[in-house]
Length: 519
Image 1 (cartoon, one colour):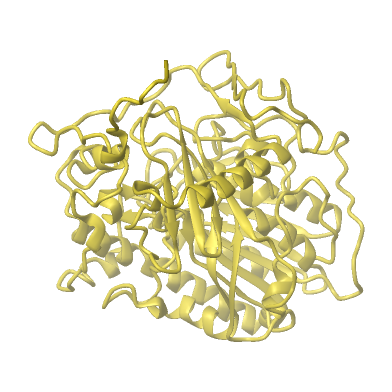
Image 2 (image 1 turned 30 degrees about the vertical axis):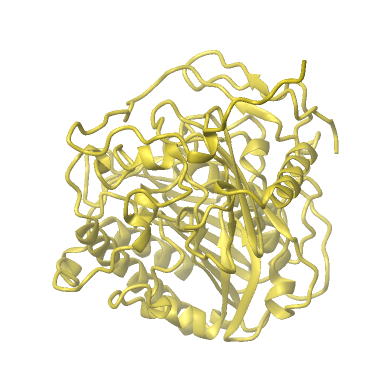
C-alpha cells in the first residue's frame, strides 16, 4: 500500500468550480504509474487475439432470453454467445453509474482510483486506457458508440485509431448534434443502434487479416428513454410482466432512505417525476434490446465469413444493471443485485471451452487485464482488476474472495447516499455514509433477493464487524479513504409526490430505553 490513511478520518477532497476540481491526490498516492509507459512485457507465445468488446447501457444481468427472467424477451445472439462461449453468472460493476463504470472498464481501476466518480467529474490528465497499450503492441483500434465519461464531449480519445461517437447520451433517432467521426461532424442518418452496427461492420471489413485489431462498440441502448427500432415497436405489448415481490411497501428491515426513495425520481411512486408504468417500461426496454442483439448477430456473421470468428475474443457486458421495481426503486446507483449485477458473456473457442459457466465474482475492473492477456500482454501492476481467462478455463484457478462496491452521493440525485459495499460469494454488507439509518447485511445464499436485512435484529454483529473490517481494509489498501465533494451544478431531481407515501419511520431497533448510568 503506497500510503495509509486512518479510516477514522475520512477526508473531504476540495473542488474549485462546478465539478472541475479534483484534489483527491492530497494525502494519497495515485495508482497510475509515475511514468507514462505503454510498452508492456509479453507473456506466452500464442498469437494475439482479435478483440471485440460490446458494451450496452443499463442492461441488467437477467434480461436475456436464456435467463427466463420473464415469460418474454428474445435475445438469440446473446443466447448463442452463452451456448458457444462462457457465461459469467456473477458479473458486477464496482460503481453502478455510467461514467465511473466505463472508466473502470477502460482502466482496470476502481472509481476512487481513476477519479471519474460520477457523470460530471472530469477525466484526470494522464489517465491510461488499456487500448493505448494495445496500440503500442501493434493493434488497430476503434471506438464506436457512447463515450459519456465525465464532462468530456464526443472528441476522439487516446488509444483509438478510429473514432465514432456522439455527445452525452446521444439520441436513438437523428438529432441536430449528429456524430463525431474521426474529428469530423457527420449527420446521424437513422436509428442509432443500427447505425453504430453499420460503422462497426464497415471498419472490420477493412482490417488486414494479418494484423490484430480491437474494437470497443458501446451502444446507447438500452438507456432510457427506451425507443425501440420501428420494426420492433409493440413486439411485447400484449405480454404479461411479473412485478417483483419486494416492490411492496414496508418490508421489515428496509432502511428509511430506501423506503423514502420510493416517492422520488428513482422510486416506483414518482418515477422520473411522472406516472411511469413499470410493466410498460420493461416491455419497451426489451424491445429496444432487440436491435442490439440483431446487430451483434450481423457482426458474428461477418467474422465467420472472414474466417476470424473462432480466434476473436468477443466479450459482451452491460455498464450497470437496472431496477424495475425491486425494493420500490427504479434505475441504478444502489448496491442491490439488480443495480450492480450485469450480463457478461464471452466467446473464443481457442481460449476456453464452449458452454462454460463461471460462478466466480468478476467485475468491470477485470476487463482491461483480460483484454491485455488476450493480446499476450502482462497487465501493469497498478490495475486493481485481474485476468478472467484462467477461471473461464478452470473453476479451481485462484480468484478473489470479495468485491468492493462504491457510489458517491450526487446533489443532482440526492435520494441515494454514499454507499460502500463488500460482496463475498455468500454475504453482502452495505455501509452508508452521511445518513442516520440502518446499514444492510444479506445472506445471498438464503436470501438472493435481499429481503431479510440481518442487521434489523440482534445476532449478526460479529459478521457485520468482520465484513466492515474487510471493506475498510480494501479501501485503505487501494487509497480509497476519501469522499469527493463538488460544487453545485446541473438539474436537481429532488421532488416528492404529495399524494404518495410520506416520511418513513426510524427502524424499531433505534428505539431503546435510556441507558442506566452508575453513580
